[in-house]
Amino acid sequence: MSSRQGQEARELSRYFELLFDKAKEQRSPRRALEAEARRQIRLIAATAGIPAVPPPDLRKLAACLGVSIRETSLAMKGRVIQDTLTTAIEIEKTLDESEKTFVLAHEIAHLILENLVPTPHPSIRSAIGTFSYTEIERLCDICAEELLLPLEWLRDWVDPRVPSFTVVEEVAHISRCQIETAASVIIKNGLWSAKLYWCSWKNGATIVDRSCPPDEPAVLASVRLPLPRVTQASLPSRVVQRDVAVEFGDQRCRYHVEWFIFSREKALALLY
Image 1 (spheres, one colour):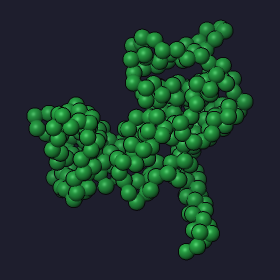
Image 2 (cartoon, rainbow, N blue to C red; image 1 turned 90 degrees about the horizontal axis):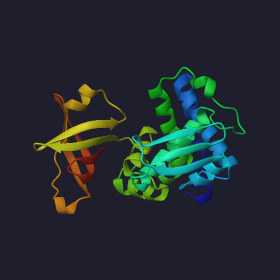
Image 3 (tube, rainbow, N blue to C red; image 1 turned 60 degrees about the horizontal axis):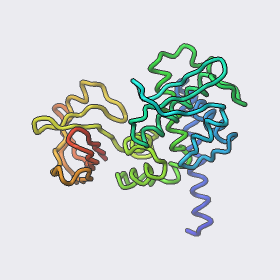
């Protein structure tokens, strides 16, 4: 295949991806709203001169919105403070830099989606007026992910055939976000056919805390992952287990399991 034919094939593939995404949006009002929120965030970022390539200049975006940023001691990760004259984003000063970046993107999403600052584009505030606190937080997370990891950029960067924490580390490094954020965004947008688990260890057993895509608590409690062999001195580390048995209640399936182990209290398991 010539380079021209290869380019045409990629463009055709992308065309059908967009058609498929549009069809899914039309079948699900919630998905359509999420897509519209992504588009609005991306449009306002572009107006501020922020390209859809990581890492984004979030401080420039905040300045364009007339918002100041300060780090201080908080009982939460971040918040928006407003009075009659000013708007500010406050971030807990003890967070690590990658988490501060995500919190800043999340709070900027609140400002835009809830129309807390004037923007040059129509707000979707009325559409989310009936949302619960949890639903609004989830939508702001989605928009924060779009700012840090633009979906169009991810589709070009991530090879759909090869799930790997090596790729996740590269994406996290480029976007200056956390490993778990990069991995979950890749998976939840269907770029890999894989499952991500957040795990810890207790009494020689693996405890699964949550997953992406999300499972019910009863399902999470039934998952039994094989313990990787690691030493405290080697942490953090990556371990790959090929073709191992994973138990889901009374069912047993075989997967490749790749671990990213931060500590005995925190590890990610990628199943594919």
